[in-house]
Image (cartoon, rainbow, N blue to C red; front, top):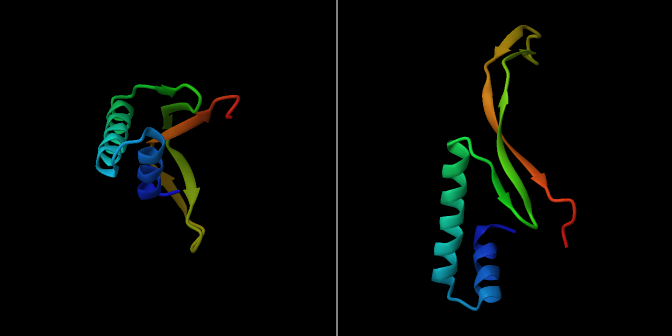
Length: 86
């Protein structure tokens, strides 16, 4: 399912216009991104939890030359689904 299909599904399920559904979906995405950038955890009951995980620096290898390459630390989004999804 892509974003436009999600907007259609929300519009049908909530019995609202596609314009209002798109505004709602865009707002959810915006708030989710903002909270994750702040380092906060976002829990959606019945779906799961989004959190930011710090990945440490590590040594990798260039697949073409085999030379060692230092990979810098980074942040990654982690999603943990709820135990039961209906």
